[in-house]
Image (cartoon, rainbow, N blue to C red; front, side, top):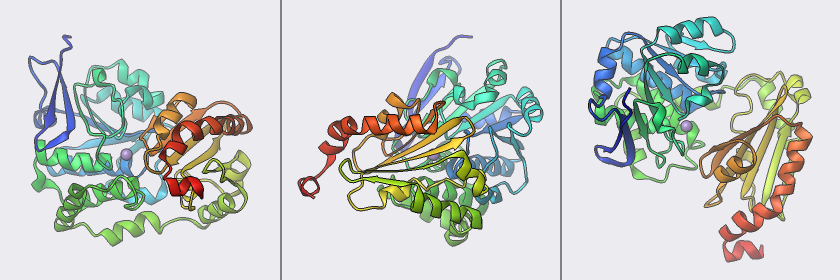
Length: 368
Ligand SMILES: [Mn+2]
């Protein structure tokens, strides 16, 4: 197939880049949906509020147009997010590999939401690469893999994929089909990806969007409680363990980190999603600019990095821990032991402090 890519911007949203493959006959979002017979929406591993929110906002939107779709995640989503899946259509590859592969085999239109590289779909990659289907990406992370999509919407200035999806609904589809459930799913992604409106949200368009969603039936209190006031007792005690026994604060390097080993995960009956957001407690201390959280998942170590201001943890995660994400929030992965990963992290701190943290400190902060 001829592969010519053409870029344009989303109407009224200059920060959103749209890439259409095959310049001769450019794919339109509305037409692709109208012509599709089997639509599948996929999100990333350990789907967070934005991955789940955007998937079900789109699912429900499609349903409102008369289309059905499957939603697939590589592994199960957290308990406090399942309310968005009101028709119980989620398949997770980890527990249902055969059904998942069958759904992907049958699919002729694939939506990739809240991630931007097919290669990150892990165990599903072989099926996705071996099958002819139209692939559409909607995402807000850096460095999208443009060439692997027939149509791609990328805006790295928005708070979340949900905010971007809202913009796409308005620019390319029919916003009158945004009902209360679509609005609640979009709000779920926006509120989780901004840490309940504490970062990535200093632009007025976001609040105009939320005002409009309230007009469409969004109940912000209901969504907040469903997501943030819905933890199990064991998750609350897991948080206590992190803060009480697994927190290391290095004031010299303005850094705080926490870690959880397999034993901890077992002791507190870890469930998918239980560690979500815990990394942010590191940044909640005055003077701390850089926070990290290491969790052991069997033989792998997952890492989350957070920073304040211009300190770039995306580059840090990319250069040292096979990861990436955003400037102030990124993730990484390692197959080394928890001890080795923490040792490596600590050994990187002096240089990271000199090069990335120190230049971002105000004169008062330097003296403190
Ligand atoms: Mn996101």
